[in-house]
Image (tube, rainbow, N blue to C red; front, side, top):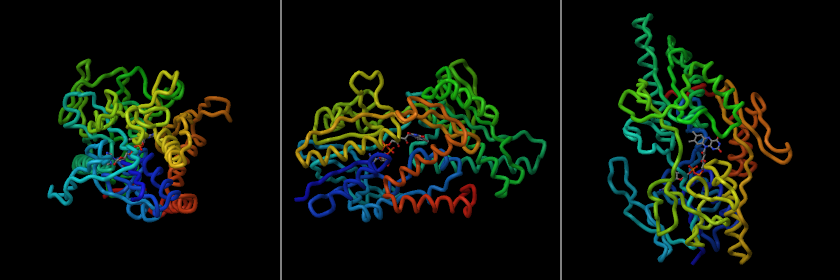
Length: 435
Ligand SMILES: Cc1cc2nc3c(=O)[nH]c(=O)nc-3n(C[C@H](O)[C@H](O)[C@H](O)COP(=O)(O)OP(=O)(O)OC[C@H]3O[C@@H](n4cnc5c(N)ncnc54)[C@H](O)[C@@H]3O)c2cc1C
């Protein structure tokens, strides 16, 4: 029997890991398997651009089957449901077709080593009506749904304006969460709205958007230095965004959000982008140790605390480095670094070498305000600690993050080719995805 390594979740961390394991171990003695509930991958930090329509996910997505063929891993389509640690098997939920008809029944996959990399979902903190009426930018499907709803509302307002040019019809959007996701989405919406007039909505422009960004904390972008967060705040207000800080949402209804102070904020589209937690299915899964937010608690080697054969990486794991006050944050750069450590640790297990300890190196944070601005801070020994950056340089570094992801999942040659194709597409394709 081949040694079977099962990685669950082909996102920022998992996809890179299966590529590297498959390329290194090959198919002769090893079986590297990716279990994933979608058939294609899109890098999660791009989802706000997919939602606004400024990025066509069809051009940037990666099909797991062909990627697996190229990099010597097998792709299994399905959703993790449980772990049987005694039998060393993961339980895969029944696979249903669009009408709910069962295509493949519940089944199991054997593992010798297992890596859980299923990411996180938005945390609505149990707020009344949030699950029912809000959109969450957790995956491509939801980003696509948001884009279609946005276009429909823009069409409605455009039609109203054609019939009644004096009307003050607007598309009202409320976004909860002043972190990077909320801020980036707010700015991207203005970029998209400014382009719609070229595509048949002649009377529509960004002045017809009314975006409210709502943050419970005292300021937006708490991960960035105050000066940069203030610059982003001012940039958003200059675009027309109403930024509310120190404002908690207590209820969401079909057409509004209600704040703790009693204000009602009308909204055609409601987005929840405040905080993340690991999926509920991880709670106590296979008897493994989890936090209240369902994250799997891992040791410095990234092995779960109760089972050395099971690793966890990325947003779904909880790792508090020794002496640190905060756990490693849920970021793409953390998922990438963890994938590298687990790759080396799995190889170390085969070679009976000591496993390495995971050290998180914070390279800084960057927040893109679409084409209007980019702000952030870089960290590193080379620049002597933390350096605040803004504008063109920040934009270049921001864009390079996705390019590095492309190289890490496709290798140098294809990665570089895709970067060039991306540039060409920007010239030859429409600026917005409208279908
Ligand atoms: C709009 C947005 C912008 C962001 N911007 C940034 C940024 O600028 N910089 C940054 O560092 N981070 C950013 N992040 C956070 C970053 O995307 C995540 O930290 C990162 O993707 C985590 O990687 P991961 O591998 O843990 O999980 P993910 O990339 O989320 O991948 C998880 C994978 O697991 C699959 N999966 C889930 N459940 C199951 C199941 N039950 N069975 C099988 N498969 C399953 C999912 O389909 C997915 O493919 C952003 C996030 C969002 C939403």
